[in-house]
Length: 235
Image (cartoon, rainbow, N blue to C red; front, top):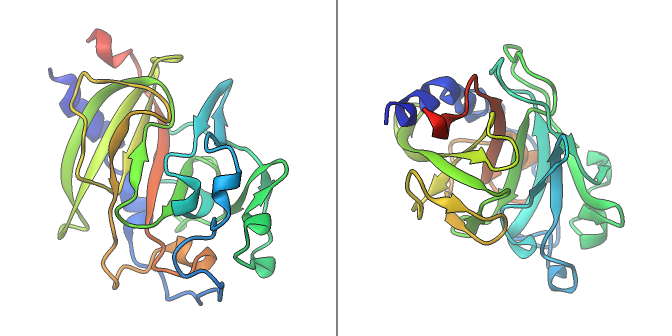
């Protein structure tokens, strides 16, 4: 299938936008060094973190493994803007408590600026911070159309997984920074049930932008929705 090669070419530049090391941002002191969701078990685990038109995108990791959620622009003209669900947080008020991160209206999210070369909407990229090794599930129903191993910055092993949405085959969700992939091309995935892999840990020297909202190195899974010219599965 030539398509499985094309998808990484179409979306391959996405990870570059947020893979580069940032200037070392200050760590936010929080009482929980592992997760900001220490009380998460009292909350419904099916959390809608963003919407793509009428399609719900679920939090791809368990709440008790999540550290922060942030949106940002990407260097990809074919990307589709996501609509954040919840309330925008004030970075100056981060306390690390569940009430601060998970508000009554849904997930509390943050926004990050790009690197000056971004061409997308400011909410095209979604970073879900999580504890390395945590399971990553499909955020929406669809079919796997790409599983690509590549070297982040040319020297760090990483994996990209592409999901063609069942409710809109013209859109592919590209998920990066995943380890130990558990799916192959052609697999049908179900939101919040199909395990795609695990959260990869970034090398300590790669200080991620998400780090400004967490108490770790900013390890995360990135999600970007990309508009494709024709339904991939029909190629």
